[in-house]
Image 1: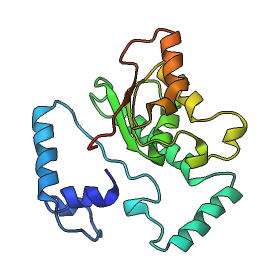
Image 2 (image 1 turned 30 degrees about the vertical axis):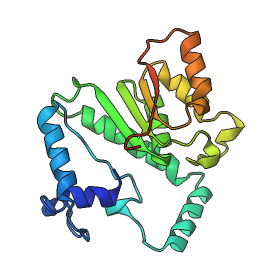
Image 3 (image 1 turned 90 degrees about the vertical axis):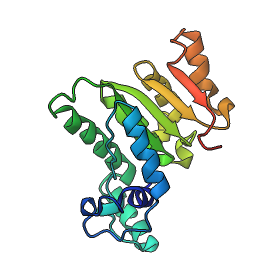
Length: 202
């Protein structure tokens, strides 16, 4: 769920949760769907807008955003490496809450942010499941980490993560993930450890 979708879904019912935000027209149908989901499932959800998104957006001017991203490189960073850190800190902060060390942790992300979530899970020991929607098959499509392609690519990282975390990749091109699935088959991982599924809503 993107930031604007989040505002449309929850902003009409909980406007005080989004101080200063320009709320779009409420999506009542989406809100009812979310409400019914939480009634029927025993889970809680955290929506994390990493830096540069939503309440921490620097500017709406795309040219200025490009200049900001270039400045990160002067510091030996990229916006994506810092967003990996944001995801990690969210996981760590959640686990410090009373009783939050018990439930299985399940992360959902889409697009380039799915790649960031994948990398964040490398460093956190207790992530149970990753739901990754439309994740790029290579760093050539993002996320951007300085010099990463000299050493590895997303396929290899997904395979490392898959040894300890259940991965569900939503893609209409399952052959793109043959490296991962063939590794899972070769080493006889549990059937549900790695799944390549049809994109939701297709």
